[in-house]
Length: 293
Image (tube, rainbow, N blue to C red; front, side):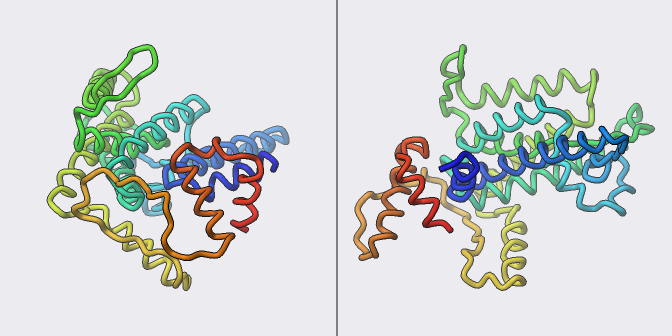
């Protein structure tokens, strides 16, 4: 199995967070490669202007999609790398307690809320009022995911390289302090967007504990889109209100009678859930890839 096929398979069987990481990396690579080649021919296109979020709310009239797309583009490789590392870290913590649907609900609503805070900041602070600055990066949404996990389980212990075991609320606290310190120094709107995402993550969990998924509109929207395109067999997004216990481990035994191919697929997926994708043999990877076609 080649590298490309291996990546395709990991994308297919990966969760929501892994798919988001793939999309962020792919869009970054396409943007820099495509427009880098065009620049060799003297063609300069400010593509980020069309997908970034402007601090001027009037710009939303001609690019309303930017309230979402800004979170899928990054200003440089280090910006992308850091955000994807933190997304991978925070999503694992969040998904320890909550579902993939709740993860997506929070991710996209935090993206929008952080964007609104970013725009509002240029009207609340006189020093920023005359600036027209463009925002890119998934930091606001990622802060929402991380702070949601910290709000639900602040005493969870996390092992960090070179530091050792720390509690999750310690990490959240340090990130808040860093953003507050940097507010008057540079990228004020961006740091306010981080704080907005963190605030939304906190509010999301508090509301979810009361039985109200304030990001449920995203699930409903995805259901509506699926219905419009006739995906009758697709699994609908469902709101889950009061499921706050850790997800039970998958049972290895299978009672329902299945055909041989399906049984092999289930056994491989069980192995992935227990030991990770890298634990599969070359034959198992090829079998799963062919079965997914």
